[in-house]
Image (tube, rainbow over all chains, first blue to last red; front, side, top):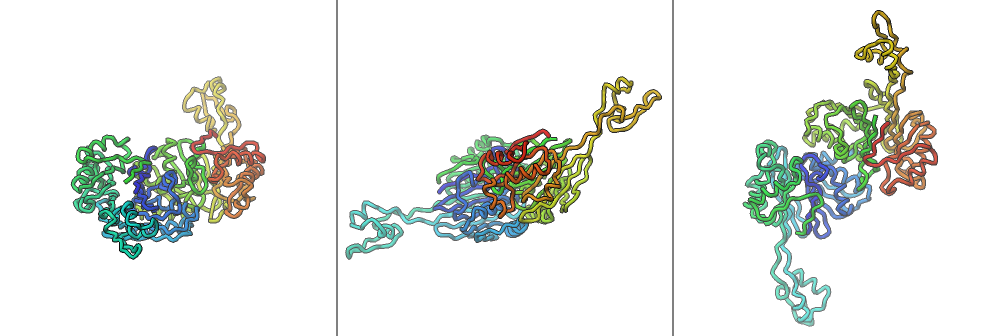
Length: 298
Length: 298
């Protein structure tokens, strides 16, 4: 699994940072969280293909988080995308995208599904779920959690060879937990595979104040991508605009037991985010400040 | 007057070229022709201020020409713009902007006027008019012409000094064509000013096939910014998608008697546009191929 940070600025783009857009690439699929204006440019720059299986999750209906959906759909249309595209978000996403595509005379040549989310399971896919939790912002807003399913343990390849199981489909069946017969003898999957491997959990906050609900929602996640629009010195501004300070993000991640915290969504006034990083590190041991183009192997 | 090319790509942005956006800066005001996705980034990079008198003219309602209006309005709002913003375009611009701002929870703190254009005079401002002409594209589309008013001739400053007119307000009155009295004697403006200076005319095609109507509309203009999406080798593609080839742009500019032609709106397949430039130069003596960031003193 790979995390890609395509846009890391809050509210307005800067020469160094584009508007909100974070992607997770896993098993050939792209899960995009937010798509601010310019997302298609960053998406193209990252070399992600226009016809990949893809789901977009919009956290809330502010322009710097969702206007880029229009350009993505238009450019995918021009590139003759055939794969379905699923877009999830607050109820307003349906009217915004539908009305805009009508105004802009765009008729996607691929199936486009727009879905209003509510707290709970948003997507139950092969290998993972995506869940939503109410966030606390100036408009209806959601945080998302990508929760991979538990995966079967690794196959003991030396062991199965020793047991005379020929390399090929039988190995795949054993790996997926199925017992197989070889020369009249049963080889049990549980004897030749390691313990089940837990799936990774990746949380994405969107814009929000920190809340106990989010702390619970993100409990124990492996990677937590949390907004930290302001330094703690500007906490009043964070309260007024319903954002989170870097220190608050660090504290929430620590209380939630998140293994790794990635800060993003920086106010333009904070330049290189070094101060925000230092602040969050006072509360949490593993913190990264995202920048446009950052990729993390998770 | 200054022409600024903020986005010069057709349909999809490339690493080098943003989506359609051309500005004219004159007497402190910005006239923007089209605003594709990312226009606000290029606008900020060009160092144009968020609170300048400004009018936006959208040629047609394709996303790569108008989606950027949303981000411009949002960012101007965040920067507490107070000046009115006027946006002109096909009728659809009104519904697109109004519905989108509602979806995105943006309430501009400045007066925002959205106006549907029809062929003829769109704006009659102090010092210039902007006119629209029907273009020929896949949807309702307009070309625009900025026509400066005739300006009074230059004041013969040595002459007025010799006639004993003191430097100050009287000079300004003479310059603007008014006769003045000095020591009981009348100094006539026409005796101390040169011939009236014609205003500049700048045409912007938007997306279109070349037409006789546009040739007439752009007759004798000083600067003609014309789309040349394709090379002439791809003329069939230009016909199918209702665009203009570089050679056709050169020929139209020559027939219209345009003094200078600037090509823009290049298909991503044409790379550095050198071939398109050469093609247009076969038909017209003064051709420039625009690139993002190009500025021309007109």
